[in-house]
Amino acid sequence: MKSRKLLSVYLFLLFLAVAAMYSLRQINQKQKHPVTPRDYNEIRAGGILRIMTEYSSSDYYISGDTIEGFQYELSRAIAQIAGLEIQILLEMSLSESFKALDENKCDAIARNIPVTSEIKEKYLFTHPIVMNKQVLIQRTSEANNGIDPLRNQLDLAKKTIHIPHNSPALLRLQHLEHEIGDTIYIAEEPAYSSEQLAIMVAKGDIDFAVCDLQAARTLKKDFPQIDIDTDISFTQLQAWAVRKSSPALADSLNSWFGKIRKEGIYNKIYKRYYNGQRK
Image (tube, rainbow, N blue to C red; front, side, top):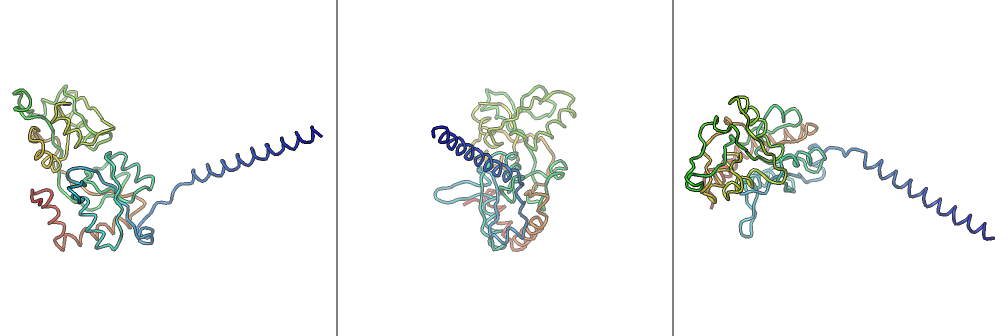
C-alpha cells in the first residue's frame, strides 16, 4: 500500500512538473513573438497616439499647476487636428527613446532630432520642425576664475566634452577630431541628458558639454554663468522620428504639421518657446 501511495505522489509531482514546464514554454514562445508595429490604421482604430519626449525646460515641463513645453504644445495641436488622444511618455535619453520606438512602446519620438544620414538608415523623419545647431556649453570668464571661453575649435584638442550616450553630437565631435587633427576626449554619459550636462557645467561639476542652441538659450536665462557662443556644428534640420514600418503615420504627421503651420498655430508655439515670448 505504501509503495502505491508513493507511486501516486511521484506521478502527481511529475504531472505538476511537466505542466509547469509546458506553461513556461508557452510563455517563452509568446515572449519571442515580436510585437506587431503600429502604423496609422492601428493608431486610428485605437484612438491613441503614443508620443515620447524629454522632460526639459523647453520640450515638456511643469509650471505651477500646468504642463508646458514646445513638444507638448505641438502634440496638443496635433491631437486637436487629428482627432486623437495623445499619450505622452517621458524619457531623458534619446538612445532609450529609440529603443522604446523599436520595441513598439511608443509611436513617435517628439524631440528636435538632427536629420542625419545615419539615423535615416533606421528611422523615418517628419518634415523638419526647427532649424538648429549644436553649441559648446562652457562657463563665462566671470564664472570660471577669469579663464576666457574657448572660441577656436582647434582649442578643443585634449579637452573632455561630455554628451549623453549615443547622442547625435557624437558623430559631429568625431568628425571634428579629424578636422582639427587632434584628440577630443568624448565622455558619453548614460544617466544624463544634454540639458542636465549643461547644468553640471554651470555648477562647475564638469567643464564642457554640447547642447542644441535653442535649448541652450532657454538654459542661459536660468544659468547666466554658461557661455553658449561657440558653435560645434553647422545649422541642421531637426524633426520627429517614427519607425520605418510606419510610413502612413509619417505621412499623417507631415499632413498635421502642414495644417498647424497653415493656421499659424506652429508660429505661435515656436515664438513662445524659442523667441522669448513666454507668458
